Image (cartoon, rainbow, N blue to C red; front, side):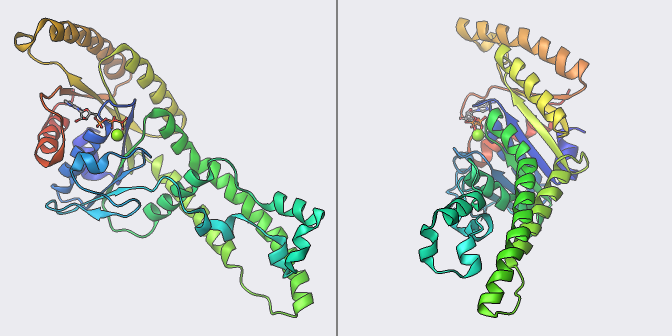
Length: 330
Ligand SMILES: Nc1ncnc2c1ncn2[C@@H]1O[C@H](COP(=O)(O)OP(=O)(O)OP(=O)(O)O)[C@@H](O)[C@H]1O
Ligand SMILES: [Mg+2]
């Protein structure tokens, strides 16, 4: 499938690659193209160092979707990289003192402290994981977008992001088990002490709902009829190596990839100074390798994009780039 078909037919498109190669620019440009072709589009930046608002030329409040003025059908969102942990505190901590309705003074007892430590499951990176959790839940439930475009962070972070559903699901599974085990045990003791009626455990329901969102998101991301990952690269040796690694990891994670954008290509040599002509030659040598490896051997569509004279920012430049993204596939 080429990028045009992807933008017109799929529900999720992710743009990723090495740092600074043009991920945000290509993602924004594609989002504008899709929005102007009747698809209600949401573009989400998952890079903690956001630049989506800068690219589109609008201020984006962290964590809140904003309709882009002047472009019908386009909404943008920069996710808040750190979720507010207190929002999730009731879900992540199982506090035996609270569960049993015991006086606080018991919290000072060594056994209780050990138990509390054991049951407080805040693994490292939890804030980032919870931010993703909120995002996945949003993507899986409450929206009416036809297409969600992800402007991702540079490769390493994105690979961690893509493996998070598995990690999170395992972690939530453990929490659910612990809540059931401890919840039943402490709840029964508490009811004997306080003669309270048995109440529904709301947090357990929330955890189960979150887990379902994660598993659905995992299914969507690996479904070639729903999602496609577009790799952005520049025609340099190091980028070829990194793109190969990224592609392998994506294949390993069952994420569909059919398009690779080769960005920032120097054009007509007659216009160029000696320095730029030398860079163009270097690029052309690498472009031959890129076509051979990714286009001929692996059958990926290559989209070749010229280096623009100016920075590509805001509506009219992004729209101009869109023409190349849609028409320059080989
Ligand atoms: N084909 C091009 N011609 C000229 N400038 C370009 C081109 N593609 C991207 N740029 C410029 O390169 C800069 C970096 O682009 P962008 O922010 O899209 O990269 P990125 O991969 O998202 O970076 P990061 O890894 O920091 O998120 C921007 O100033 C953008 O305008
Ligand atoms: Mg970026």
